Structures are given as C-alpha cells and as structure tokens.
Image (cartoon, rainbow, N blue to C red; front, side, top):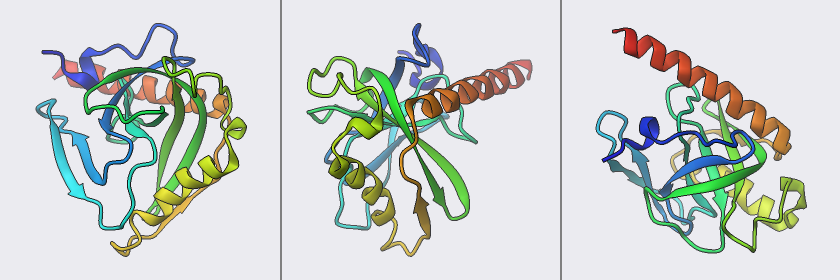
Length: 180
C-alpha cells in the first residue's frame, strides 16, 4: 500500500498539473485529515458550524507548507471519496490567516471534469463561486471563536509559485529525515 503523502509523485507536469489526494469530499461537514505517522485517514472533527466543504479538499503530494502538506481545493461537479488521487490544474491561490498564522489554499480544477477543466484562472469562475469558497473559510471556525481572515483569490501563477516553494520545502524535509 502506498503512503499518500510520500509515495505518490507530485506529478510529471507540476506545477501546472499536480497530483491531489482528496481528504474531504465536497459537501461533507466532517474534517478528515491524513495521519502523517500511519498514512491512514483520521477524523479530526465534525465542523462546529452549519457549513459544508464547497469543493473536494485535500493536499498536494510531496509538498510541505509549514508542518503539513500543501492544501488544495479541487473544483469538480461531484464529491470525490477520501484518498482519491485527482490530477488537478491550479487556477488560483487563496491565503487564509488562521489565528495569526498564514495558510495557503490552492484553488484547482479537476482535469478530468469537463464542467470545470476549461477554467485557467480563479477570476474566470462565477463571482458567487469564489465568494462561497472564501465564505466557507470565514464561517467554519466562527462558532469555535477562532479568528480567521481570508484574502481574495490570487492568480494561477501565485499558486504555482507556492507549489514550487512547498515542493522544495518537502525535499529539504525529506533529506533531513532520511539522514536520521
């Protein structure tokens, strides 16, 4: 069995098309995340607010943002099961500040979804779709009394730059870990 974060390649066409591993299907209100020590999915919590994930949510293989893999929201017509591998094309970047700590969210489209794969930039999406994405991150921690800020989405180029930095951070992390 492959370990999703380490054994699945970032993608041969990265950062233009990346391998995303879905943790949370679109429409869910349970936050699942990859347990880094075992490689299995664990339930982190049920969301405190009456909201649900507006896109399939997961991480990009072989990346590191601070101490976790880089987050990705994959727009797709359908909810996708946890641990599904999706080829995703980054179209933007949303930066969230969660209790004073910066947290990037890559916005991407599923390459295999004909409804979304024509979009190249987040700004091409209907404005309401972008507000739904942004609003979710503003709302979902409100009942927990946690302070968050969410910037308006940035460009696909910004997302690709963050992916490249996260790829390099992952390589450095693995080199340090492998030395032990």
